Amino acid sequence: MSRVAALYVLPDGPYAGRDDVDLWPESRDARLYAGPWPVVAHPPCARWGRYWSGGPSAAGRYKGGDDGGCFAAALAAIRRWGGVLEHPESSHAWRAFRLHKPPRAGGWIKGLCGAWCCCVEQGHYGHRVRKPTWLLYYGPQPLDLIWGPAPQTEKMDLGFHSTEERRRAIAKGFVAPSRLSNRARTLTPGPFAELLLELARAAA
Image (cartoon, rainbow, N blue to C red):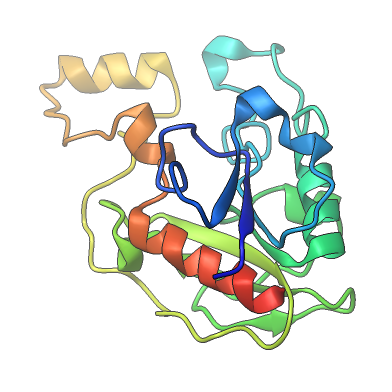
């Protein structure tokens, strides 16, 4: 089985301890990856998502898109070596790098740059929540995925927009639903990791 480089991943996540994966956790600095394997890239998304600013309590602390060049390096890697890049749905990186926005309902579309992109929910592949995700793929015609809404009803977080909003809700007797830990939110489920590895191998 051909090897795949897994970039920007946890050292103890689903890609770890495998002979068919060249693991690039934070300690290796995946921005330096120079081949030769096709790539599965999970560049950091905190500064590209809906809450890139860190919320009201972190006003002025962060700059949108300031990820140290990780997304740009991941994009260059999949363009050079083939493979797939994963980011949250509605990632601002798509606009910043002039990538085609995929339809929410699913299905692959091909952009002028030659990349395929789609929106898929990780809930179909083992995540506890629906977690809509955008994929960018460089390679031949990609395989069909499970499109549309996943069946999960649990939410990623509580959905408050400020500390004051949370305080008012608690004062009114709000009972919080279960909330995922930081690790549970960011960890790629095993079946989804296998899917991304399959995509990357097809690009080799």
